[in-house]
Length: 497
Image 1 (cartoon, one colour):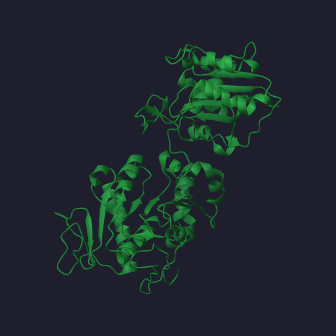
Image 2: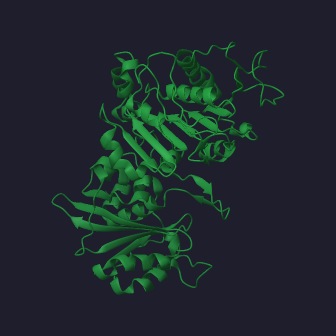
Image 3: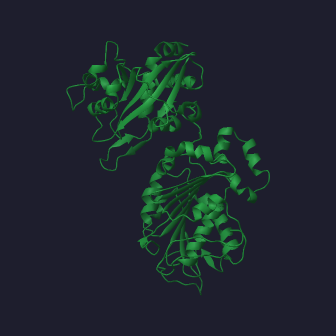
């Protein structure tokens, strides 16, 4: 990689395997860059610290496709037009010149009618705004995603998105992906339409969800803080690489990394330098939660009662989190050892109880239950309330005092501050969450405060039913109800104080 560029690209009707040589120009790729460049997956994410050469990859990828597959149109986008103009395209055009020898107005033109001598095969445009035209006939659409609907109607075969950390999920999935349908690239005889997302850690949760990063949290955090290793994963049609700035330090000033680290908090440096996708971005509801301190292996202990906390929202799922309360030398441990989040058609209180009984019924002697006060309201679908159903289904394990539900939920802001105090170690209580409780960990990590200090619950629309619902917050609500009741005396004193 020091004196030539070798990349196994896609097969085409015209070229079997492409081996590109950059005219003798020497350059060196970092291991994460090489991993992304040689991917044969359709959806690729390079998530890395600032200065990691992400946009450089965009220049190489785009140059490759335009050079060898000029009949296939491409798209290069950034989050805003200013970013596209002053950052993304600036760097990509530098790569085109350095590695491909392409000069503007000689080998390509931007936003204007191609001059005489340029191939116009496949061109059918009334104007050339937002279009880069190449001498060999290749066409690349460029644009920002702050007005993604402007790209409706375009059709292209490959796309590069630079710094999508603030981009909306629908703009990528519903606009860009649906535009990627032009044929002309093939892999193993099948149509191939690759997307490359090049970004620093996202400020929005959907990107983490799309690439299932929470499933590999321990593996990610154990590899990205090294100066020599990085996180790499291929699954289904996706490829992901997460790496630190250290991998590209040969191309940075000697003081760059230390300057960024010294001028930012440790939390921000973890994102800006090490590319950690799980760092706090500000405004978190559970601001004192730390996965390193509060998440791990939490084993079920049959000798202890099970404390079940319910949240009766049924879309996207109905929720029950399972806890055990254990005394320690310094206080009490609140141990979240399991969670049940059942989607349709199992999103009923009856099915939820059946699932709990099936897994723990023969290993448990007694149970307590907590939950949302709305569970005391009679449903239009049943003559019973949710908690009457719970009492009927779990009767074998209940006793006098097992029902610990309230008729009114604890005040949101006060329970927020009380639980954050617990996370900070300022009380006699300690919260431990099992790493398999994915919904709970996601809530603890990503739920934000609204302008009034309450939980900001992102609303989305179900694609099948058209119903609008709260995407997050159900597991964490169950945590709130349980803790404020188990630690009622301490919580009451906290509220009075």
